[in-house]
Image (tube, rainbow, N blue to C red; front, side, top):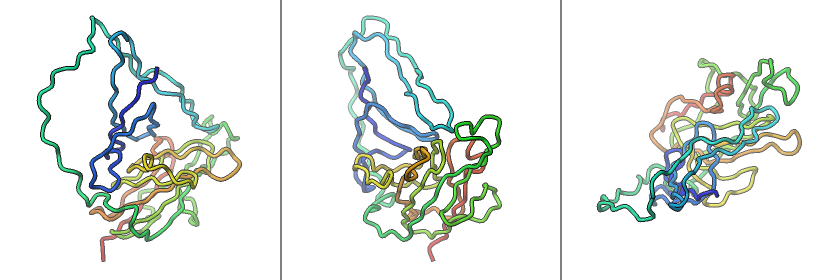
Length: 263
């Protein structure tokens, strides 16, 4: 029987801390989709003492016709020996509560003026037929700003995006390939707002630095995620964004963004 998971943090940010000042609020889930490079912090209440074996499992993931096989399997097994007890443990008094997170992190992000809107997309090129992308064929992977020419990543490439400290931008990232990709942003977090153009529920609009973009079936609109990119913090300079699947980023699916200091 699936046990409820009390999710308290995603990608290092407390869940439910929507305005940057409120304390986090746990989210109850039966399973969590953790993209490659993503992180999750959660609490599991153990089953009754009569349960002697439990498993921590990953479900099968459909990565698309061009993706890799990712089957269901047990990651860990828990075996209980001894009589067991349902009695709670005696705990010392709770330590003093810590202050709420600094308001400068994400405060007022949803209400901030959007200074730019951009569309980016994942794409790939191979001579292999669809569904056999990784079978003895070299594949090139790209992440491109819509309107620019696809380009494999090199450290000496000019930045694909230039913005300014203090900006709040809306990015929509599309997947135009037959396998999933994991959009990852260095240095800052973004707030996930929409999937396939549909506004997410408040409990789903979380601060992340990694998110999965589902694969394209070959017909219909490209799958997409839309997020608010928060450049209001102290981070400036050049850093990268990329697909966090190692084969893809090594194959060129990465680009540089430059954040200029405030004028």
